[in-house]
Image (cartoon, rainbow, N blue to C red; front, side, top):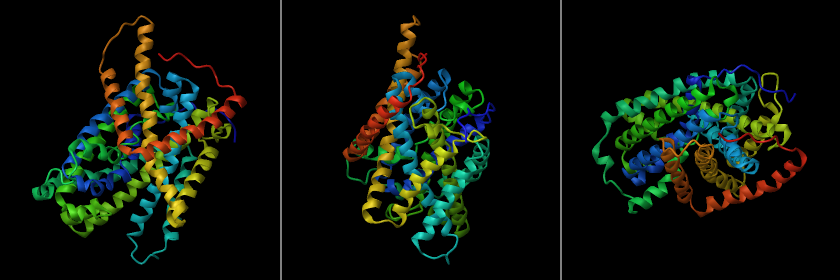
Amino acid sequence: MTAAPAPAARPLGVLTCTCLIIGNVVGAGFYLSPAALAPFGMVAVLGWFLLAIGAMCIGMVFARLASIAPAAGGPYAFARKAFGPLTGFIVAWTYWISIWASLPAIALTLAGYLLAFFPGAPKDPWVTVAIALAAMWGICLLSFRGTATVGSLQRWAVALKILPFIAVGTIGLFWVRPENLAPLNPSGMPVLSALSTLAPLVMFAFLGIESATVPAGDVDNPKVTIPRATLIGTAICALLYIFCTIAVMGIIPRETLAASSSPFTDAARIMWGPWAASVMGAAVVISSFAALNGWTLLLGQVPLAAARDGAFPRVFGHTNSRGAPALGLAISLSLSSILLVAQGVGGHAIAAAYEILVQLSTTASMIPYIFCTMAEAMLVKSLVDRGGGWRIGPYTPAALVAFAFSVWVVFGSGATAAMWSLILMFLALPIYVVLARRQPEPALEPFT
């Protein structure tokens, strides 16, 4: 392996980048959300509307930053450019952890739904773990072939997985029973408190809207492609979430829905019978595959960009002949594998530690979002300093909404998740000091 730069070819266009976003966003957080949100009734739908607005504002921020200063690494690159190397390192660190801590949950979901097609399979947790590990490492090996292979797989996977969900969210509305949607707020909580409680659950389903910004070095015409793909992908996901949630909540009685481990499969069974449930189960497997495929790409690209800037250990900056960060991916996926085994067959203490990591992944993911929304303010300031005048365009209000929204999600996550996120950031500081002493960073370009 060598530390050679990535190949000059840029295989990712608007369609592939949009599929990367949809593939990463529409995952376990979506097809399990109707059951988790069932106790909140129609307030959950209101939450989807509000959080969809917030997600679109975050998408606009990433679109703006990508159009002005596209750079490999996405949130890390924007934070570093706006606030300096330390902030960039913290963002890269938290973002990297949030990815490898979340992959085991996606892989276990894939394995669980896949085993449902084989009733005679042994009910042994080691079997589930083995399938999940095989899925993770199989996709990792495919990622070694470069971004072109990942992008091609993502286009096909998204095309196959999204059609059954569109069917449930549109045709399924004809099976909605109004009595299943009443009362509007069965939780007994004030509406604002219920919305704050919902915020982390709903936002977990939106994580990944920044996906197209991360592999910017492999994107064709990134100043145009990334903003367009980000806004299109986020809008498609938001509409899909809202209509599917209304349909599933209206088809399945609330008590049954709250206890369901596969709400979309159950809704499809009610609508069209057992064959539809099998199709939906296959869609979930494909959806999990697409999510694993897309997030594995980002798992390699973020530390790769940081390592090239001297903000991550050099080993993460090595690439193979196809420009893939193979060694860095192998290291990161090894950490995911340890957590997967702990969750699947480990002791209670280890599994509890894993659950804490998964719970804080949403909060950890909001840290890059917060810094990137503040980067928009830095961009406006730089324009004013250069005599450009103060102009309030659509991006500045969107950045303010995105910032408030991100802080609100952190607040709704609770003190425990926020505390662990803070601890993770402090743990990063000694590593940064060691790296800063060993390998001086290249000079920063002006943020313009």
